[in-house]
Amino acid sequence: MRLSTFLLPAGLVLALLLSACSDDPTKSDPYASWSAKDFYEESKRALSAGEFKTAIEHLENLEARFPFSPYARQAQLDVAYAYYKFEEPDSVISAADRFLRLNPRDEHVDYAWYLKGLANFNRGSGFLDSWFPRDPSQHDSKTLKDAFNDFSTLVRRYPDSRYAADSYKRLVYLRNELAEHEVVVAEYYMKRGAWLAAAQRGQYVIEHYSGAPARVQALQIMDAAYTQLGMTDLASDARLILASNPPVDTATTDLATSLDTVQPLN
Image (cartoon, rainbow, N blue to C red):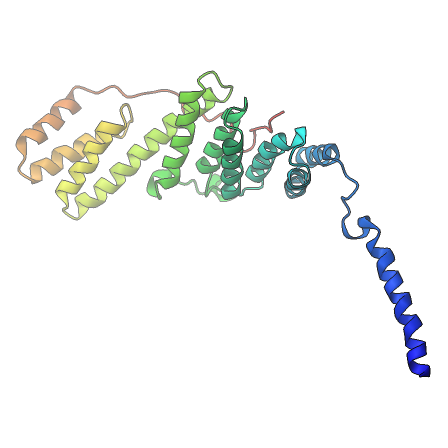
């Protein structure tokens, strides 16, 4: 009897203490008193300071807590940019796609397409590239094609966009790399005596990548492959086109806007 009498007050005291703690929301949620503007301003501060993980947390909190705030739509784009700087390309694309789905008529949809293109364009790049440069044409062409499609969409739909000029430069670069990729594959087939497959790859370059420097190699491959196949007329056609010196697009591929210089949308 005495033991239960002693335990009862102790249990009540513990319950009261726990209740007191739970009544203070700041104990469990340090952002309970924050407004949408607080989250937005802190995310901007974090972005400026290069604290991209912190910026992502604030922006995602903002949209989750204040989905109908005037800041929420901006947060959707800013988080895509923050993920881009944090080198999370899949998250960039997911965030950009979500913005495009929810805001198809927004004035900044071109920026969302631009971020998608950059995420695919820089996918797989790293700090070692300055010492051991990659040749994109030697790798899987899927991300090259994805980036090409993103930038193509931007340039086609929004030709007056502030990002159109840089996107066009990247399109020229990507076109040349994709053409070179086809040539690399064609050369692989040539080494193994797969003449028809090699010729078809060369033909694909001629039909789809007009102006690419790799067209010269593609025509040479077609000439050699068709000769091996005994298709003399097709081989002669390839030589005639090659002799005519088809024009090569010499548009600049200087990528002035790079991973380090793209800015958040103001």
